[in-house]
Amino acid sequence: MIIITPRFLLILLLVWSFGPNRIEAGIYHPEERLEFDFDAQGFAKPIQYSNGFASMLLELRDLDRADYPGLARKKRLNRIEELLPISKRTPEQNAILIGDMIRLGRTSELNRLISSQQNDFVGMAYSIHRDAQQGQWQRAFEQQKELLRNFPKTLFRYTPEELAWLKRFEEQYHLPFLFSRSRQPKSTGLEATEDVDPIFPYVKPPKSNTEPVRFVGESGQYEAGQIAAHEKAKLPPDALAIVQQLLIWYPKDDRLLWLLGELYNANGEPEIAFEIFDRLTNASGYTPSLLREHRSILARYLDEKDQQQKAAQAQKEQRKAEEKAQKERELQRQKVNEWTYVAIAVGLTLILLYFQGKEILRRVFRIRRKKPS
Image 1: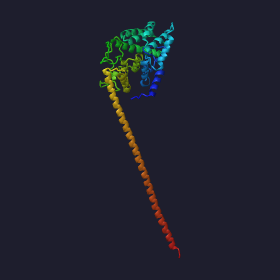
Image 2 (image 1 turned 180 degrees about the horizontal axis):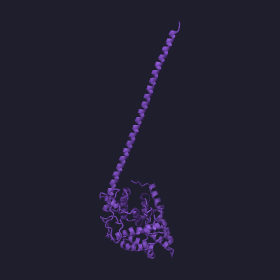
Image 3 (image 1 turned 90 degrees about the vertical axis):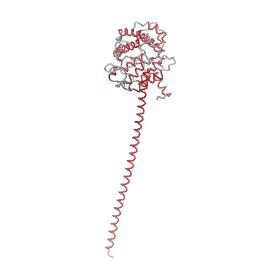
Image 4 (image 1 turned 180 degrees about the vertical axis):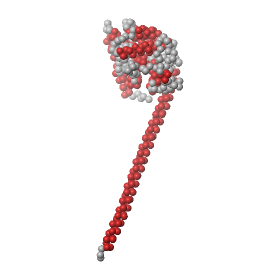
């Protein structure tokens, strides 16, 4: 259990305030960079959760709060104040301005600004995000297809490697994400049968993913830290990074966060998965029945693991105590043996001295008897 102390809150505040700049909310922001490193095959490496992504996501979720305590909000407000009065802004300035407004939730000012950039790649990306956030998934999906036809070869400060990954991400995962959301029935409340988004493996729309990855073990049942080999084969090597990027673009989407937790469990990290599930069910009030079931399985597993670790630690300490007692007994026996040897040596020495003294006295008396009187 994490104990919230003033020092912990201060550290968290510092993380929020001075964390690295990021691409945000479906935005190609000229002042921000892609967060991921890439391996030799061009697959993105995920951001470490506990020491990076968790605090990043908290910041992205809360930046639209007027009482947000970090410097990240103030930084964006200052940029907006600087750029708004400019009558003829460059495309980069417009991209920065709209991106910051989206992040700060200034929706009333967005439509005019986005319309002025509608035929531009970045403006189209912003429009897609706006429509998705408003639940206009079908319109966002249709625009996404057009966006992919106009994906640029160069853009702001992105490297060719970053743009190549982003194009693959947009086509193979963002597009199917928007399509699957556009196909789901509209509901005013939480569906009890809700599951994670079926974006793995990649299936090109308009085909639906009829065999999405199932997060089950070889037994066919949900297992802590496990996924069946044939199900794991449906996941790309950078599945974690892909869902992290979707969450950077849609930070308040609890269903996406659930998917991220399932991926961590499949990756052999049930502790992180449980942390995410627990936050969703307790802090966010997001409680599909399947999510609650998976959380319960992980809770039991981690509790049993904790008990086993405590038992193992107790056995380890007991062995140490026994070894220490054994060493003390051996040391005591060694001391006793040493004193025994000393006593024997002293005894033998005394016996030798006794017989030697006796022999000396015998010789002395013999000499005296031989002397003439």
